[in-house]
Image 1 (cartoon, rainbow, N blue to C red):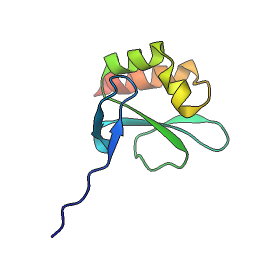
Image 2: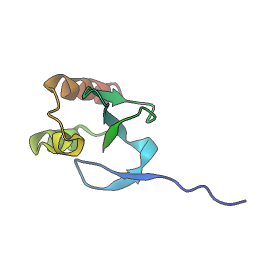
Image 3: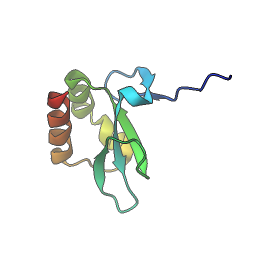
Image 4: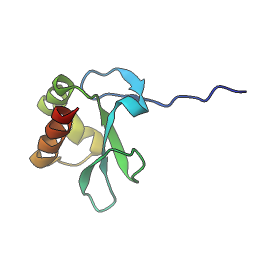
Length: 88
């Protein structure tokens, strides 16, 4: 049997390529709403962040999430991400 290809995505904080399942996806839909996509299947433009608070802080400080999604990310999304990381 063939080996399945594991999709890799790049973290916005540490800039490392990791398995898609290891990362948290933040998505912007067609209406311009930004949300956290834990399933990884929501339609829209996505950006990925590691399950690490340090990576999230780097991405927030350099505004990488807003640049990747091409929209200003609300502060409440960062707060939800921090809460999600605290739970893990």
